[in-house]
Structure formats: C-alpha cells, structure tokens
Image 1 (cartoon, rainbow over the protein chains, first blue to last red):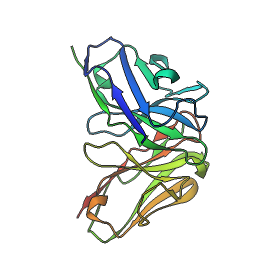
Image 2 (cartoon, each protein chain N blue to C red):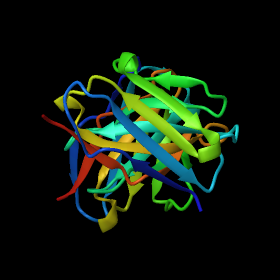
Image 3 (cartoon, one colour):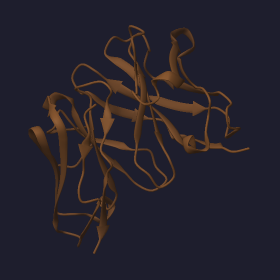
Image 4 (cartoon, rainbow over the protein chains, first blue to last red):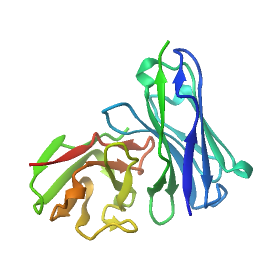
Length: 121
Length: 108
C-alpha cells in the first residue's frame, strides 16, 4: 500500500525557515520510475507546484521560488525534505507531497493528506 | 514558463449533463505530459487523466480527456453528484511544471 505523509510545523514566523518532511511507504525512493513533488495551496486558491526530486537526485524547482527552496531525499529513511527560507505570510498554505511516476503515467498518482502551514508573528 | 489557462473559472451544470472543461497552454505541450486532477473540499487532489487522454486507475469511464498542442479538454459525460468539484490541469513537459488555475464545477 502506497502512502505519503507530510510533517512539519503548523506555525512559523516571518523570515524563519520552514522544513517539511514527506515520509513515504509502499515504494522506494530509489525506484527509477518514481519521484516526489511538493505542491502547495493557499486557502481558497489554486494548486502551485514547488519542487520535484527524481530517483537520480536531480532536482527541479519553481522559477519564482527557486532561490528559497531546497529539496532533498534520504532513501534509507524513505523521506523527502523540503526547506523554504525567509517565510512570509503569503506562504500560508496547505503543503502536499505527491508521488510522480515518470515512465508510463507522468502524473501524481498518490498524494499525502497535506499539512497546513501558517506564517504569522 | 508555460501558463495554463482554465476558463471560465466556474461552470454550473445539472446532474446528468455533459461538462466540457478547457485547458489552454501558452506554448505547445507534448500530450504525454498533460494531466488532469479532481479536488474536493478538504481533500488532496486525485489524478484523473494522464497523457492527455488516459484514465488513471479506478477512474470511471464517464471521464475522458482529449487535445494536443495548446488546447486540451476534460469531458465528464453524465455528471454524478460526486463529480461536483474543482478540476486542475498540469503540464510536465517543460520546467517549471505548472498548474492551471482550476475550474470549479457547481450544481445548477
């Protein structure tokens, strides 16, 4: 059974760094057909793709947030970590991680439940 | 960056009607890399369509996708009560990957 679960702080202060962890089960982060993306959704707004990490450790980032984001993975722990620096109230959102199959599907076939993050002093 | 435009932002239908949702790209997208998602309130998105026209596992055949180049369409033939939701298209053909703004399908 494939699952993804996001974890991290619910509340962060402006200018702080956010660290989110996605813990996966039911598949391996070393599987060359699979990778993990982070997507966020501000309250009442659309989905926004943030970053992706491939099985090869190749990274891809949103152009507008590239300077603030770092994605990494620990295959032995089955975890993908996203850090976002210099948090601002506009970064308040639900953050999702999702599995992307990059061979036959090219779609996020499994998603975490999402973790809400509020940026406020 | 490829911009995906989903308009209108809201559509209203009666149950049983056919819904046609549009996704237009600012540049050509290889149809292999065009996906559609459904999202209901308080839930994570669910993959409906990948490769522009292939249904994901467990998706009813009333959902179909079509299109190529810059124009893609999601069709729901015979809306069921559980289909009233927000639908997003996403492209993976050119980095950065991008989502459309979504189309909300409301009950008339």
